Image 1 (tube, rainbow, N blue to C red):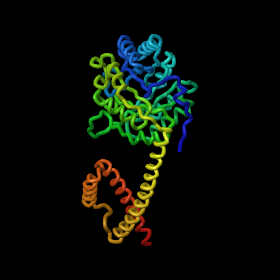
Image 2 (cartoon, rainbow, N blue to C red; image 1 turned 120 degrees about the vertical axis):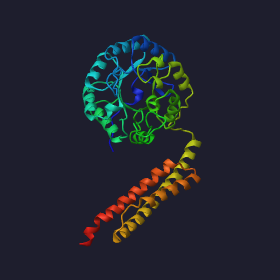
Image 3 (cartoon, one colour; image 1 turned 60 degrees about the horizontal axis):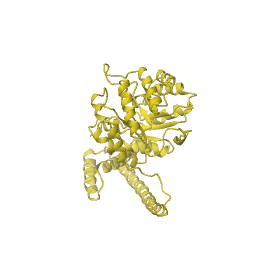
Image 4 (cartoon, rainbow, N blue to C red; image 1 turned 135 degrees about the vertical axis):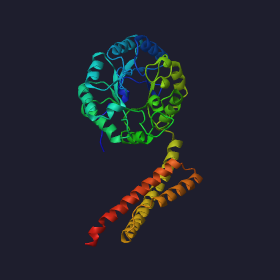
Length: 367
């Protein structure tokens, strides 16, 4: 398993109590007045790190694509007048050099850029021999290896102050959220690299103010340490993503209503209780492995039987009936349809693969 050489976030000099770590500010820097008004409001709410998009990757030309370099001067004023650390998104070598020139404290790589290893490498090379923290958003599509690859490129270039931002994934399926959360992928990355500072971006995940608090709470319940939330002094007039931005005062209220979970506890009562429950889980998981083994052995016998009688591997109608019955029975046990569908479809795919292997080997065996 790959490892990363990281500087603990406690040594970045950025984030202090109370938890969670918060980065906030407008989707885009639009004017000096808008940037400074928002920064003043956020400072009043206890925010220490101010974000603003200077360059904005947009789907269609002609949309507002960011104010560009002049906006970096406004970020300098935020630092000087309000004492906030400032951060922005970079998508090229030139962006990095301009940010370094204007004293930007932290940069992040956006979802579209993370998906392009060439651009990530260009940014990594530009950051070599610097000490600036870098956060990496997940790629647009749910590709964990691509996300990890971006981190590895930066780390190999000497970037040790690394963190990640989970902002969800593009999906063709219609959901309430702007981007499918895909928490399972975030959990997998957290499991592989528990030392990585982990932020959630509820603004881009939800796409609407109404979802920011529930997504933020979900992230904290899963053990993520930080939030990147979009905040604008006048969201209705925002030139980009107006529906998902909170005014600073509402952001402060939202943060005050969140429950921050501890990652662990020294309580004897907790330790004894959790250890007993985890021991039960271990036994159940071992039983599941044994049952999976038994099921696949039966699948092999079925594959041999089908081969010998020249029968196709998949009978779609039978599988549809089985899955429907499993989902129906599962409801009686309080199990969700989504969970059961994913589990049993995975089992079915493995069974098909085993039977296909047997069928493919048939000509060889007949020689």
